[in-house]
Amino acid sequence: MSNSDFGTEEVLEAPESQELKPVWSDAPRFCTMRDLPEYRFAPWNFPHPIREEIGYTKGEFEVDEKINPDRWKECVAYLFSIDLYHQGYLWEAREQLKGLHALAPKDSPESNLLQALYLNCSALIKAWRGDVRGLRKRSLAAHWRLSRIRAKGLAEGGRPFMGLDIADLIEQIRRYYSPVWELEDGEEICPEGDPPRLHPKNL
Image (tube, rainbow, N blue to C red):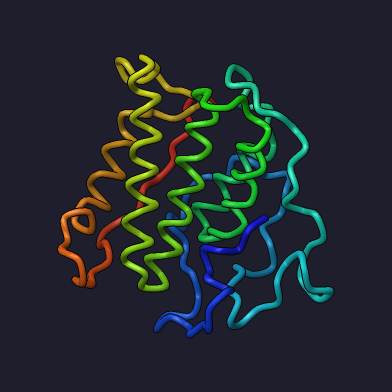
């Protein structure tokens, strides 16, 4: 899996806040059979979870199960990615979602949703690093992917798709990121308020 959202190809400087914070600290857990990792990965203060021998995992975030949109509640990797995201394990959540996305049929509704979710993780990583251009690019792409699902008629009347209210998620992303979308080139500002939260229904 790529680590490009942390920009390891360039000389890294730690953000003012060196630790990622939970997106929603008191969110309910949806995958209680898996423990959260020992730390939230960041390249300037922790070993790489997979590539380094002293990392906390070897292959833990590899995905070998395809998600069935009608049976999403049975997909451990999907549920665990939501837990990871809410608790601020953004790199780890992104790895789970990218693995699921790689196995999904190309441009299917589930492919678009999984890509939107991992792009949102990437956008928050960019926000934490103060990379406004990267933040804008990824958050706009996440919004576009979700809009493709809505265009297929899968968000009508608040009907959830893979447990998520797509129309509500689109609005959360628009509300949180749109101040950055409207910036002039060179302006530096990051979103304020609560990042998008995921509320799986019927669990």
